[in-house]
Length: 535
Image 1 (cartoon, rainbow, N blue to C red):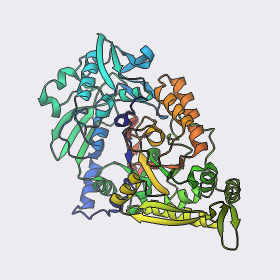
Image 2: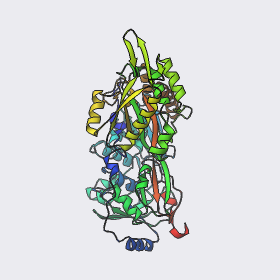
Image 3: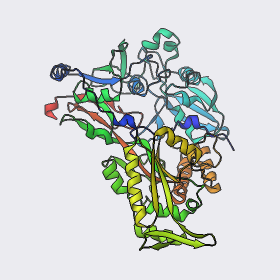
Image 4: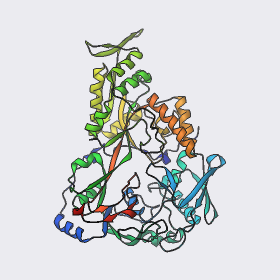
């Protein structure tokens, strides 16, 4: 079998919003909020944002996601994503695959220009891809180049990208910002860039601020907001504090954390389904959990609506699979898990278990004697959300005669137990990439060791392989739909939810707000500034 490209997947086992980091309380800062607000109101047509301190303004050499959000205002991507996370033209006008899906021919729109007036050509795209291939592993877009063998310049508006294998994620690896070869071939321009987006570079004061101004550009109308001032901050808590004090105009937050902060009554919230996926995992070395009826009984006992309402404060979306429900690849015809204890008991009966309502146990007797159902549920102690899910699930399982023990351990021990298989069930999560591939979780042949439950099913393997190698849109939709249906039926995981994040905006800002993962400032060209009192 072909090597799984875990690097392109870029999935990260979640501590985010489930860890000690999410418990940090915003520290008080010596800021005269009234003075800051007065200064803020005076800046009538200036949008103030924040990011970490940048060591470079080359988006392909940058290592920080907060910096990437800002640099995307200056640099347009080769291929963009729409609100359904579907690839769409941007600098690229069209594309098609040949040679069994290993060669991607890309046609560039003619007449597109950089802010200095020079035309964007295929040479810039080839230069950008080569830059990504040669970038360090910690850069934001490094993984986009890890399945690329080479590029070939064909003519001013055409290039080829040759991949080492057909892969559904290859098209997503083309969603990187394109940079100018003429500009970035000189190292001094790492902090004085020429871009192509709605805003152009004006000034950069390291560790202090970045100034951008609205640019007449070849992609659309000049933005209404004439100037953006980007303040350098140390962490996300400082971002939120600065926004709450009206020092900055926008901030990205995990909606579950919003209750910890005080925001102005005029604050506007624009929610989106983020790529943080939460689930219940199984250890398939446990003979009981190899029985699908047992897994379905457990799934039927998950109080999913209560979990979303009470644990995530309604700031999450139910899902039937690890595909983001906002994605055009999500199969809406696959039924979500349904809380039904009577149905759970019927699955236990189908598995050969009898419920003893006097002793509140489910048991079966065979040649080896009487066996009672009982499982250990593993969680990491840093996560209050995971512990609450485990507690609620434990309470429900006890009502159908399944005994449980919650093992709450520190994250290092948690990961050690997952890797050694020392668990029956676990509550976990992944931060997924744009690419919806999830064979690393479930494929029986995995080189990355992330199939913690040792799940193995030849039919699922075949569907994963079909989804993996699909490259055309119709084939991808069909392949992923089939895989999602099979995963929901087989239950290698019980898919719970995707968490929601939000773009918070000061009340004085108006416009068409459509944030998506990785592009929270979409449609910034439409934004305008008015009086917060008017809003």
